[in-house]
Amino acid sequence: MKGKAAPPRSYMWFFLGIFLLAEACLIGLDLYYLYGQHGTVSDFLFDWGIVTGIILTLVLLTYFAVRQILLRYMDSEERFRELAGLLPEGVFESDDTGLLKYANERAIEWFGYTAGEVEAGELNLLQMIAEEDRKRAVENARRVLDGELTGSRTYTALKKDGTRFPVIISSNCVELDGRVVGLRSVVTDISEQKRAEEVVRENERKYRELADSLPEVVFEMDTEGNFKYANVNAFTIFGYEADVLKRGLNVRDPRAPGRRHRRPQVSRPRQRKRHPRRPPGGDICALLKGKGR
Image 1 (cartoon, rainbow, N blue to C red):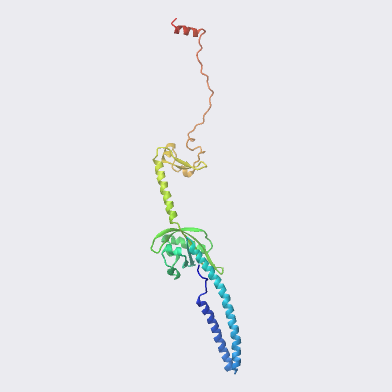
Image 2 (image 1 turned 90 degrees about the vertical axis):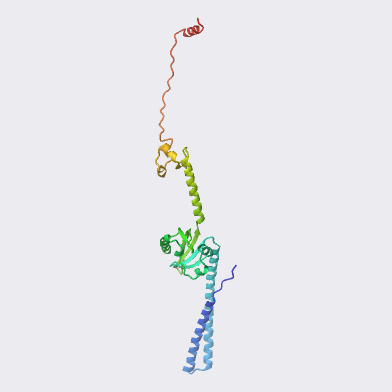
């Protein structure tokens, strides 16, 4: 844990300079009255002591009041920087022209710059965006500053050594005394996500190639019965066009496989099978013939 933030030495020297300047003016004014108005030394010392005490009191009161405000601001700034340093994302702050004012350790590590280069204030955010995305980034930054755009956008980032990688950038305005003075951006590296998406696409391609090589019909549909995929053999057998799935096809649709060629069945009355009638005694005659009589 770092120690409590303290105002810079220049702050103390500033108020000391104000006090000395006031004292110099006071002494000059008293000397004028001493020699120009024929005053006495005791009057000079009395006036000098009274007015010096008043000036010193006012300067000290102002010093400590402003010091407390400055300490609260510095403590808030320090907390923000500590929190930004713990984040797994990169954090940037820039003015309204894009000049970089702050970057956390993660961002410095990703983009290959040094803390000194960031603190020098000579880096522009556009240097970290690939050339083909810069025009879009400038337009989006302008719309964020104008309050017309929120949310995240995907860009191709550019490291100091020229390496490119995909990122998502979320930006919002930095306001001071009700006036927009810059942008604060959070950068997320999505290289792993892009690689995972590429693996999924490659596996999907292999699956479709395998399904198209099968002699059977292969199809996929969701729980609502909408067809989402069918292999080449399915289109050949059922005679569908290749874009039928894009137009939408449901298993309940009359055009669906197994329903399009189905004809309504009409029930017909059953006919009883009729046998020729035999003459009386025919069975006895047949029996005698079978015995050779």
